Image (cartoon, rainbow, N blue to C red; front, side, top):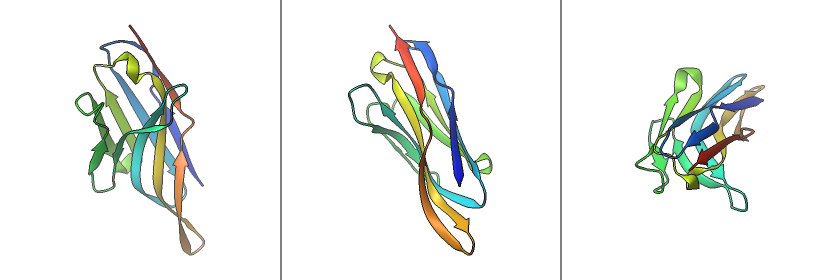
Length: 123
């Protein structure tokens, strides 16, 4: 099993910054993609940013100039630095981790979500 734990959400004024962290832990696994998605009330869950194992990133155009995704492979942790926050950025942010884990002698793919962390932006 792989556990995914997020931290760093909270209340911030418009124009402010927050940094989200997400750490994956468990027994014998390797990670391919680590990413962040967000879901506002009444909306679908949308991609914010994802970083692959080779460091390549895919960032939503709505946040591209303000958010930065990074990854520490040694810590199995992904970060989302959010600057110049706007009211429309308010949502529950979910971490997603894709990879594979060893069970017995076989590798099995996994796709896990964190519990979500609330980001609230006050105007």
